[in-house]
Image: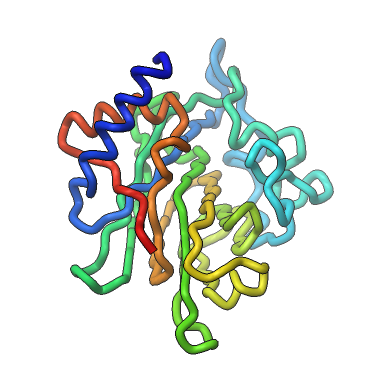
Length: 267
């Protein structure tokens, strides 16, 4: 898509305003499917998918995103049941090891004006029957997901007033402004962690300012997949100029079907 067409597409989507789910924030993502076992001629299994189960494992990744906007594996090889070489393929297109597609996640407000945005799925299998397929299983269990949006906050009392909470399995890392704020690494059962506006202030972030929100998730082992977000911190979608072109094309298709893109919030 050339720049003129891309700009026109984004202008159309921005003009649509709210998404089909009223008062919902649309997060933009890329999901990558990994095979387990190998698929002859098309996919080699990485040992960290359907491999060992180390349990909750913190400290696997860098405290800041790298120049490519991705986490870096900083642990000793094998920690968290992965290696630096394998981890480098998790959130990048790696032919022969994964296959990718755009994914958009609506996080709806629980009630108009509540300020509570929530997405709950205790059977989170968004690519069943797609990409490498279910491989004779009931679900497609082996994938990673990178979701992007924006986040901001105020601080009315000087104590924790707002929070972002995640419950899920397996690995989950959240970065705000490229800084690690949530670390739930490893292959484990459903685990819950939170951060608040006080956590963000401690990182030197400013009130009423939009910062990048990057969520990195991995589903590495049968048989459960939980993905649950609750946020009273202010969430917003990526501004149109930041949406990657492949995702823009997919989003345009959704927009033409009646699913629009949020305007950037006015703080």
